[in-house]
Figure 1 (cartoon, rainbow, N blue to C red):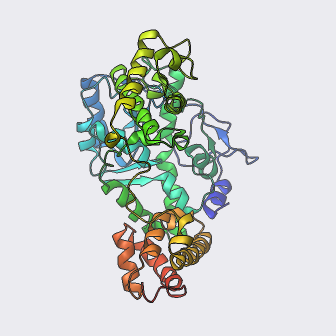
Figure 2 (cartoon, rainbow, N blue to C red):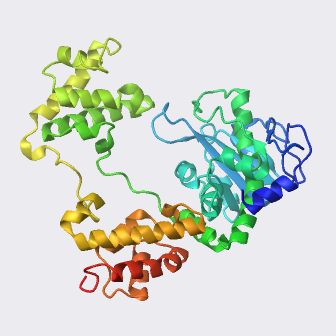
Figure 3 (cartoon, helix red, strand yellow):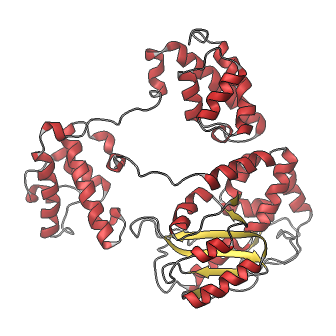
Length: 435
């Protein structure tokens, strides 16, 4: 347990549950047990579903004080894409708001009103894409999940963090429901309101803990990088990520996967349903491996059974036939173009000196991460280490290694911590002097 957690336990609230107090005290009972968080302190607010009410919410939150807690609920596994179907906010002086982004004309006015406010999110990179789609883009943020990682917490889910730091138990039973459902049931709305109820309290406690550990500036650099990062570009050849794709070896079979995947995606987008509800990945792979000659043979394969209608079965067979008719020149190539170093398992054969550099660098980074009580990938990404070890800078010197790390996107605090380790690892392994 960290000092912050011990302090929270020492100053525990003597209460029996229900809504959290307004005085910032924690929710641990006299015997040290965490308290279930059952109700928002202000009750469950009505869902904002029209522009007039939204304008009132915008004015209230613009007049609020301090950071704003923000969360979004999607319908992953039910609907096509990652659209937000509920947005939750809480700010001092404004209370909690639950907004239906589908029912209003957009949340750009709310995003503008909060543009200069620090946003508090948990796992910000998961919610920011769908928030950007509806006009909400923070200029400053505090990510409580990332803060937990940097501070060394072993479990960084929102429920675990709220319980470990603040002493309350969040009910997480509705996290995977279909949030496109209308109207939303009251238990779901309660769950959604409670998700932002204590985010700012958690932020404040984690800020103190990071400051105590000397990591607060590191966290601010990470948060700034997330807030300023551009949207991710569209994924190239997304069909290659079909589950079970490793079984598909031949180019003609790969073409079947591509044609079925793209046909499924068009249908899913038109119906606004999750692609997996249209056709399972496993069924796509089975069809690719079998190369069925007709719809009857396709229908005998797993995933194309009695629940698939004749017309739909013929649609899938048409996709298979398109792939079978392609000339060899139009077939997809195995694998994807490699833009970085090869997989580390191949280094020993391709470049033994690089393999030795990578082994030494990994060991040093792992030891430092343990010393700093944080995951290795937060200290420095494995890809960055691989790239520097595969093509080490000339010398190498602290300046050239630091420049290489910066080129690969490392933050200043990461460069400061990792550069000495990599210089030593690169110099102590064969081939470094002539790289």
